Image 1 (cartoon, rainbow, N blue to C red):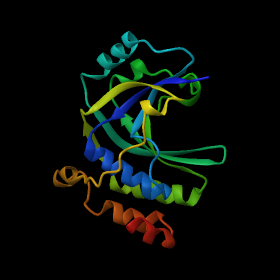
Image 2 (tube, one colour; image 1 turned 120 degrees about the vertical axis):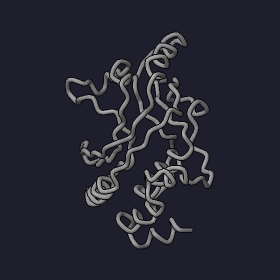
Image 3 (tube, one colour; image 1 turned 90 degrees about the vertical axis):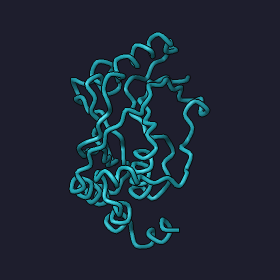
Amino acid sequence: MAKRFVFLEINDSEIIALISGLREIATGSRPLSNVHITVRGPYSREISARQVEKYRRAMRADPILFQGVGNFQAKDRQLVYLAVHHPGLRRIWWKPDFPVRTFGFNPHVTIYEGTDADRASRLTAFLRKENLKLVTWDFSVTPYVSDHRDLFQAPQHREELFLGLVNRGLVRPDILTRLIRVVAPTNSIRALAS
């Protein structure tokens, strides 16, 4: 049975390039999904266009802010993430599998999910030192159906840069190269560089 969700998808090409680069180096493989935050779901029924429009209205008055790094362990999995902030998120948030009373309110974009605790620790320390603070108005609220791959395709891997973020002093130009040295095993550096 299909599960339905509402995603907050990031459309800013420079932020996508940066986060995708971080994710690829952190995990050692290309990301399988676009940069997004799951804000609602799963639903067992269809999500009406009226509902989605209501969520869009709640989000359109302010930009998204990526600031702060966190990590947690879930069973044998380590997760490292960038925190996401927006005044409207709490109003539209509904994740019955992760109730706020039990898990807290923690919107984020996952950078690493895996079993390597040492790698997760090094990645967390690196990202905290970077002190990223990224703001964008370029995002969309979209419904997603879990078994319909055409509605949420894997990202297109264009060789995009985040030069605007670098020029505004928000990101150092060598961030990805330095991250490779911190978290990637020596034999993976050659593969990622090619």
